[in-house]
Amino acid sequence: MSKGDRDQLAGIVKMRARLAKSAVAQREAELLADFESQLATRVDQRAEAWADATAIAEAAVVDVAARGAFCDASRERSAGFGVGD
Image 1 (cartoon, rainbow, N blue to C red):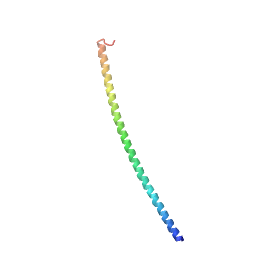
Image 2 (cartoon, helix red, strand yellow):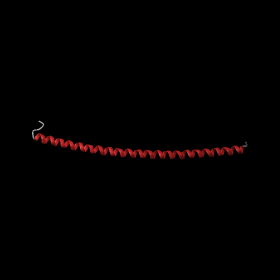
Image 3 (spheres, one colour):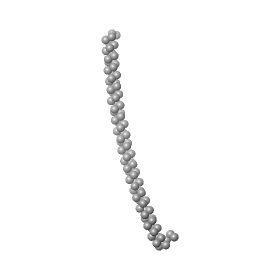
Image 4 (spheres, rainbow, N blue to C red):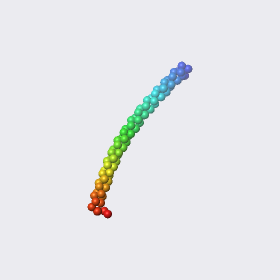
């Protein structure tokens, strides 16, 4: 193999290496974008679930508070009649 052939082959190998590095960088960017998209979807789902859970909890607190107020009012009325002494 002549020096010219070796130089030409070395140039081809370097060009393929650059192409491979470029393909790796492109694939890396694709995978990162896919990961970020999946992560954003999960965050949105969890945020929605937390919003639902918070709404349910707040409704339960209001319900319990209303029942407590009803019980207090019932006790006061009962005490007025001498019941529960």
